[in-house]
Image (cartoon, rainbow, N blue to C red; front, side):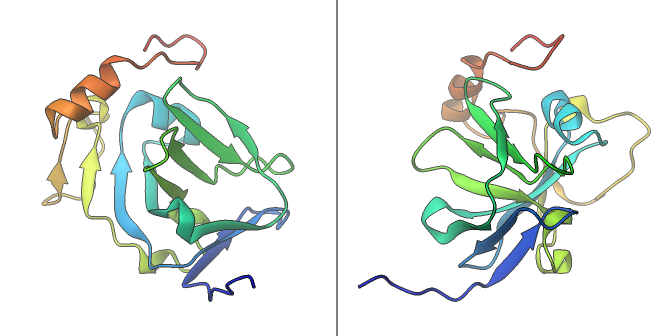
Length: 157
């Protein structure tokens, strides 16, 4: 018998072709200022909140997926182009969704800023939040990112 879960948070793209559900409250809400996230979202930073992959599901449609590097993938709507999320290609990684694609984005207050080495100098956001450089929070993270090869045009890993 299949377990039926109740969604705690839901969201989707602009046109409605792709929808998702989180079966736990959004976790680890953060912004990332790295160049890869800037390019992936077309914005000044990516705002993301996640859930364990077992507590996440696509509920309508299938997103396109771009492997932005050998370490990570980014789902998006093939019809309207909405960036929908981010995940590392590891079984224990969370599935992060773009906070702006949540139906209730206020339910995912940002806790930390990552990739601050690439923050644009005129961006003033989240003063007082914890800040981390890419991979700067642990030796394990630094080693993980050291093996990254970017698939974005004009970028080196």
